[in-house]
Image (cartoon, rainbow, N blue to C red):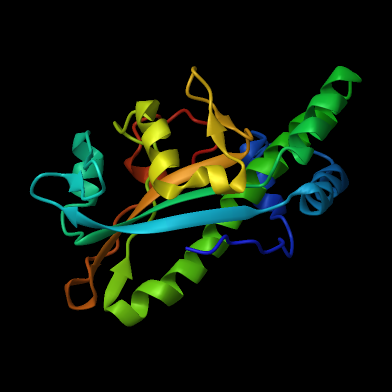
Length: 220
């Protein structure tokens, strides 16, 4: 697939506040807005995806070699999928350098807010790319179900190297460390199930609602 490369029109302040752990706290709104504007200007969104057939009975992506999907929740999520999209999205390293620089200068609040805004930015980039993917999959007769990333539920992050390989994420400059951290840090990998349009499922709960970590500050 071609590389997705579309700038962000804005970075959501409410989501940034949530990722910063300030959803219910009183805080200077101008500082949050400033961090969101900085994130918008510093972000360099890029994404890539590949579509594979999926064997739901065997829980396997029919790649070469096949990619076994392990984990009860992810298997249930994909139980009606006939195909899957494996995707990777990043907003680059420039924004990460700025976050690190602010922290090293002792600007801890600024660094925290920009980090939260960067998380919002990469999620928005993934959301925007999904809209583009839908333009490819809808004419094929498929509906997309929401994306599921390694680390959600019981899907272990040990699959990250395979996610990068199959999505061809190296083409957008992504890599994974031995500790399974994505580089650039503000990056996402995910799988999206494709189900026949006539079999569209009732909308499932969001990933946050299905996650057992109820004390997460980023929980919706």
